[in-house]
Every structure is written in C-alpha cells, then in structure tokens.
Length: 423
Image 1 (tube, helix red, strand yellow):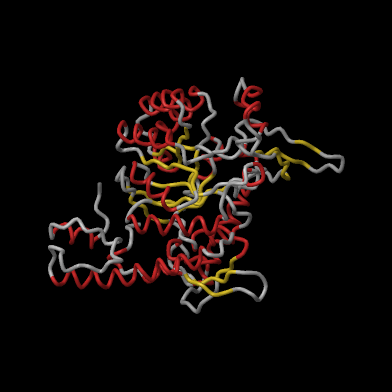
Image 2 (cartoon, helix red, strand yellow; image 1 turned 135 degrees about the vertical axis):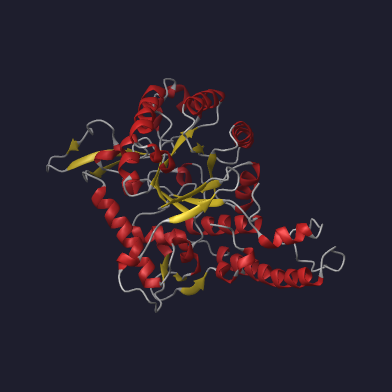
C-alpha cells in the first residue's frame, strides 16, 4: 500500500513499529529512533491528545448539519468565479489518482440512473449507479462510452449488495468491462461480518478497483472497513430524507457528529476517505458536511424530482391543482421491495419497511439544480476564504440555535503537514 504519512515512513526507516497515534504513554526512550524522531513524536503526541479531547467535546453533544453555521472570515477572494470545486484524490488501496467535484448522486434507483450519470459527468461530478439495472442495459451503456467517451468511467461507480448472487453479477460485469474504475458496496447495515468478507474478497480479486463501502456511523467501524480494503466509507444511517430507520429500529446517529467521528478515525489511521451520505437538504448542508471532515458528499433527496431520475419518460403524477410530481422512495421501503424483488411479500413478513415514499415536485432538467448547488458551495468558499473544499474542515462554525451557539473549528486544522492524509 502507498505510504502517505511522512512521519510513519521516517519511523519505519528507524526500524521501529511504534504507531504515531498510540502515544498517550509518552514512553519514547525505548524506541530505536534518533533524537530528532523522538522530538517529533513528542510534538505529535501533544497535538493528537489535544485533538482527541477536542473531538470528544464535539461528540459529547451530537448535532446535525441543520444545527451549524459556518462563520465568515476576511479573505482575498474577489468573485465566486475564482473558486475551483475540484478535489484531487489518491485512493490508498487501488492507488488510483483522480480529480472531480466530490458531490455524488446516491445509488438509489430514482437517483443513481444512467441518465443522471450522463448529466453529472458534464459538470465533472460523480454518480453511484444503482444495482438494479439488467446487465444488458449496463453493458450497452458501457459499450457506447468506450466508443464515445471513455473518460466517463472516471465519474461513476457501479453498485452491488453482498450476497453470493451479487458477487457473481458484479464480477461478471467487471470482467466484461475492465474499464470500470469504481465499485460501491452498499448495505443498509454496514456492521455485518458478511460485509467484511465481501470487501476482502473483492479487494483480493480486483486490487486496482476503487471501493466505496457503507453504511456506518462510527470511527472504529470506518477504520476496520478501510483496513480490510475499502478506499472510502459511506457514513450515514437514518439520516436520509426517505429513510425511517431511526423511527422503525431506533438506530442511527446525528449526521454531522457521525461524519466528524469517522473523519477523525481515518485521520488516526492515516488513510482512507469519508463519504457523507444523507442529511443534506440544501447547498449549505453540503458545505457543512465538508466542514465536518467529509471528503465527498452523497445526495439523494436534493436530486429527486428531475427528468434524469428516470432513463425513460418519467411517470409524472398530477394533482387536482395541476401540479406535477415524481415519486421518490427509500431503498429499504416496501415500494422498493415490490419494484425489485419477486419474493417481496415473504421479505416483508420478517422485516419492517425502513423507508417512506414521497412525491416531490417535478423540476425538469437537473442542470438548474446543479448550478444552484455548486453556486452555494462557491459562496461558502468565498465567505470562509477557503481555497479547496477540503480546506472547509478548517473553517470555524457555530453550533446551536439562534444566539445560543458555541464557536468551534475542527481541530484538524492544527495537524502538522506531516500528519495530514494525502488528498
């Protein structure tokens, strides 16, 4: 695996296996390291312990994106036109280097469509194509890309579940289309041992594939999945607009705090990326996700209701007042079961529906919505004076409602350059 932490490399060159994030004891005298390395370790230990105290203070009172506001600061921007929203990535396991605007369409069947991938590709944004397409449909799409736009493979992932049948379908698709660069392994409950096994099996068979996996909400699970072979983890349980897991199962975590926890966990680990999945209801929330430490942000409800949500003519509903709507539903809902599983009635005998069906106003072409989203993100950058989306994690923000907020800035900004993940 690519070494991305300079200090770790220096320590390894000194023939010691001491991990720089396990320094509470401050017992460095026994290390087989030079005085210079020991001095750096002492400095790093202080920073890391302060980070842990700070993150603990943030997580003592969990919060969501709706309970925070970024604080403006004096800066040298003259116009939003100066803002570049592209981010460069160096994925640790696949060793793929990429650059795109790290806002992605969710792999829901009314969001992560081929039409959506085609539209977002024009903006150099990303799409996780849903897993319910017939292989003939995907193969036809990929064949057309190979002839017309081979670079498009850098802007989408295919998706899969973790059953044996999913493995067979996914490997057949990748083997037929080796141009596929990304795979999204998606399950509602990212804490199953079966997910561990699936990630390891895929990583072993396809070392060059960049793997996204989820969903989870805490740093220990994030670190485990990255260590097993995931390049990025999807964070979010119960935070989506059509997800009812919090109500039906009483399980989940407030999204902002979950992202902070997972982001800090991967900083402890030294590699891997965080995808915030769910909880964004406006463009400001997307910037909040980056401020909390997300590397990429996945959208569902914000992209719902557009013609690109369907590859064919959308089934538009009209109410008595002449208003037009499109359906949008959670992937653990009864509606999703009916649409995609012949044995859906049997499935519903032992499980509750953990998703709702909404009818959202029909918005036509997605281009206008995308422009509004990206415009809002550019505004966040110019208000806070940040030069990249990942720099937003250094922005100060206010937590709370009305005038009762407390000022915080993610302590990751105090990390030394030696301790930063390569992004």
